[in-house]
Length: 354
Image 1 (tube, rainbow, N blue to C red):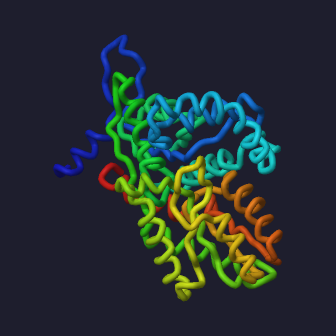
Image 2: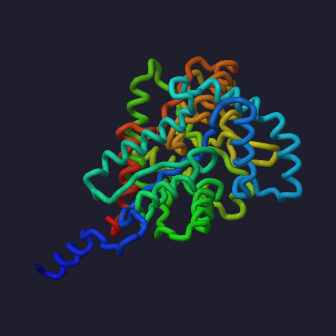
């Protein structure tokens, strides 16, 4: 037996513990997929709990607490739960009584576990939400209870922003502060320009466009918005979005004016990244564009922002102002293309551990 074989034999040998030692699992490796979040239901109080957690995050709302706290509690949380609940109600998964985001993220986790089952038998895959349930803290506890001494956290955001990727990492490290036995940790970086991601977007987009009964005159790539102030302070999100769109355009072999970038889901009165999706959709219809498609490459999974805001609200805006054909193209979700992206990121970031 050579040196390497002795090391491998030792690493794979069962640990010997003294009599009476607690039954503690160890030696495993975890991968935790983390998406944005979801309410538990669409009623007022469920929506209020979810929105309060989300809008209390200082990474999301950077307004000073003395100003934001009364606005949030006396204005936003008295009105917004009803309107947000109505939007979620339109796209709710009735069969499982949950949001589509929860359904898809669970499926992504399950499919990833199946795909990586031959990579290393020590690997455990789980999933969590930054806001709502299952929480990041619960996800880490499940992994450590399963014996994971090393954990890879994968924020499911292709483009980095402090309001998305960073707040996931914040919550992970906050959870570690409460653990006596902390696992070693890695966090996956953004992958906005990853060739596997760009190729998956292009393939998914071609399939979706081929399935339409009309040919769009142009396509909008709509990304989630961000306050302009955050960009001015150095957040790279705007640059990541435009690079994704440029690489996607090149992969499709399209001219610059056939795929345009916009930003959706703005909140409050402050200036956000422009151009705004809803205003662009309205303006295109008024200028005579009759056939339009929208993709949302910043969203790994379809959710209320894609299924209700884009597919319902923006479609209505387009048709009301003269448009005739509108299509909201699906996210990568748990399709083979989407799973190839997640698998590629996880395999790369687990390098050296498995």
